[in-house]
Structure formats: structure tokens, C-alpha cells
Length: 392
Image 1 (cartoon, helix red, strand yellow):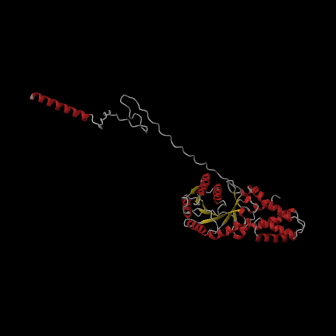
Image 2 (spheres, rainbow, N blue to C red):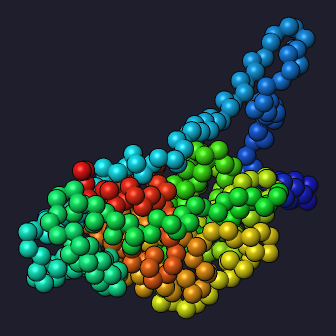
Image 3 (tube, rainbow, N blue to C red):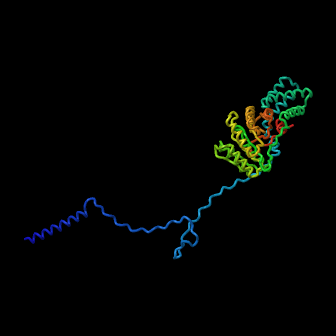
């Protein structure tokens, strides 16, 4: 009996042990570990650069393909250097443009002076015509007084005599004896320096570029200073002018110190043994004291390296007597030595030439007679007067 009980006890224990194992194996929440992944073979690194010939070949002789080198970046071609014509005789060649705008004044004056009877009313008309052309009150009165005297002496007048009288008086007022040459002679190894000043919108930067072009045409080596740091467009414009004729342009950061740019341009001119350095300054209102003081600083800084030989004031001929007020203030700050009168072909008020010279004692040295690159000419008083009067 005891033997059977022992056997039964053993069977129960074995059954319990087996049931516990199954429970552990299949209990809720148990996760089965995933089968191990087969190992992956390392991949070859893709070649990004060509290898030398014969390198990396397999022992069996199979050649691997090489990646071709990237194409070389496109090189921007240098701008073609232009050879400008010399400045001599330019105003003669451009005389017809001047005549188209000024001849109405000349025809009117000739018609009035050719009348059989020159009474006070006619002389008043002559005076009004001259003042309307911006000749100025004082020069007009001087001209009319001289003309009245000469007419009385002559008595009867032929058209040729009338034209001769008027030409003589206009030339006297324009004053052909003034020194209109640009002072651009080198000082030993140091270049001459030309400072270009004026108010906004008169064409300073364009005049600077055209002047550089004219001087290159005369055989001069020129360095340009883009001291108008307030407008990036001005520096870019000057760069274009310089590139066209092979003149180096010295620039500074936008909003930088214009005096520093002027100093660096002068230093570059000395280093390159250039003939002329032309410094373009920012346009400024003649009524703004701070900006005018800054212009004086630019001139003083340049003079630490070289002599400022020319200070050219750029005036717009179409502004008339307002240009006179501008000229007077600029002359007080930087000692103007000459006038560059732009847009002279676009106005019938060429008398500004007479009034500005009379008021300042400064000659008009350059005349802008169009928008082309070679339309800046040395001012010639006789060509100017003949253009006003038209052909004989």
C-alpha cells in the first residue's frame, strides 16, 4: 500500500514540475527574441576623385572606372579696353548740338539789332532776351551799354556789322583770356589730383568718367577714386567707366569714410606713377553745413599725400541762376578752380557761362554737350559764341 502511495506522489510531483515549465514558457507578455540577422558585408566607399592610372586594380586584372574631373569654372572675359579719341577739337565737332539750343537767342538778338530804328523799347527787348538767357543783370547792362554806343558810332548797320558787334560783345563777356587749361601736370613722381564736387543730380560721376576717358585719349595714365561712398551705384558706375579705358578704380565700403578713399586713391596713383588721380565726391546740398565741412576734410586729407591741382565744380546748365548760388557756397569751402557745365546742349540759357564766370572769377573749363562717352569737351569761347549766333 505504501509502495503505491509513493509512486502516486512521484507522478504528481513530475506533473507539477512539467506544468510549471510550460507556464514559464508560454506565460502572458513574454516576447520571443528575434532570430539573429546574418552579418552584412562592408560596402565599398564610392570614389569621388579620379585615381591615378593603375591604382586600385584587382589582382584578376579587372579595371575600375574613374570619375571624370569636374569642369573648370567659366572665366569671365576681361572687358575690351577702348581707345578714346583725343580731347582736342571736340567742341568744334559738337558745335552743331550747341547751336540747336543756343541759336534762338542769337537769332533774336540779331533781328532786334538789325531794325532800322533802335529806340528804348527795342533796347529793353534786347536786355530782356539776355537776362532770360541767364547772362545775369550786370553783364547784360554792360553789354547793352556798349552796343548802344557802338550803334550810334556806326549809324547805318549791315547784317554783317550787326553780327560783328554782337559777337564782339559776347566774347568780351565770356572772356577768352581766362586760363581754361586743366592743371594736370605731374609733380615729379607725384600725380596731379583733380577733385570733382557738386550737388546731387548735376552729373558728377558721369563727368568724372568722361574726363578720365578724355585724359586717357590724350595719353595720360589715370587712377579714379570713388569717394562717393553714400551710393554704391556711383562706385559701380565709376568702375564701369574705368574698366572701359583701363583706369584703375579705388573704392571703399558703402557708407565708409570718403576722405579715406580719396587718400587711398592718391596713394595708389603715387605707387603706380600715374599722371592724374581724379576723385569723385558725393553730391551734397550747398545748404548742408556738415556735408560741406566733410568736403573740406576730403581735400585736406588728399593734401597729406599730394597737391590738389584742380577742384572742378560740376553745374547743370539747366538750373540757371540757382547754379550760381551753389557755386558761391562751394567756392567758399574748397577754392573752386574751374567749372564743368553739363547739359549745355539741352538749354537755351547758355548765358550761365557768362554769369558764373563773372561772379566767381572762375572759368568754365569743360562743357557737357550730350550723353555719349566722348561728349565732354574743353570749353572754347569762340566756338560757344559762334554757336549762339549761328552761321554767317
